[in-house]
Amino acid sequence: MTRNLHTILSGHIGGNDVLLLSFSSDREELFSYLYDEDKRTSDNAAWVMTHLPSDDDEWLTDKQHELIDLAMRTESITMRRLTMTILLRTQFKSDDVRTDFLDFCLDMMMRPDQPNGVRSVAMKLAYLQCRPFPELLAELRQTLDIMETEFLSPALRTTKRNILKEMKSR
Image (tube, rainbow, N blue to C red; front, side):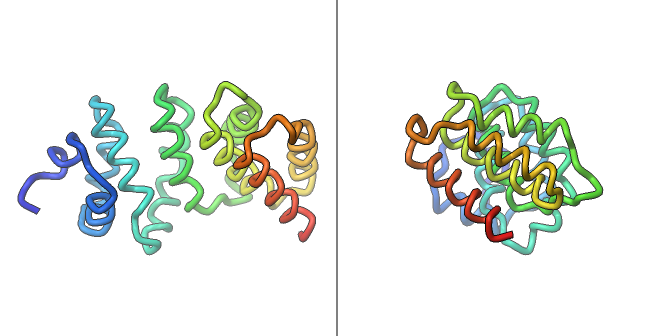
């Protein structure tokens, strides 16, 4: 690439650019741009990070706490959704549960003022965090049951149904 990464991320990029950048960029440099003052730059960095090769999942897990903090702190809906999407690729360890993040996910999934993308990813993340703990799974099931299916979008209904189905198979 002839232009530097910051210049590229600060402009308009498309899907092909995202894929190219996800395989050719220094992931630490890319990660640093999540905190850029310019919203377009930070959002584009997050978008690229959602497409990092699967070989980077362990590295992303090492960054999990920073990503959680960013998802909970940001005012940008786009950054929240993208950061939470990145977190889906990380391993949630049963000996390192962030109850503040679990509460955040439970809150986000119940809030009709949040976009469906955020709510859906929040449901998935809540499930990943609760999975090792039967008592938390029971709480999540109750929370999902409270969500009246007829008032959910098709995407949220599908996410809810898939999580409940996976819970039954455990």
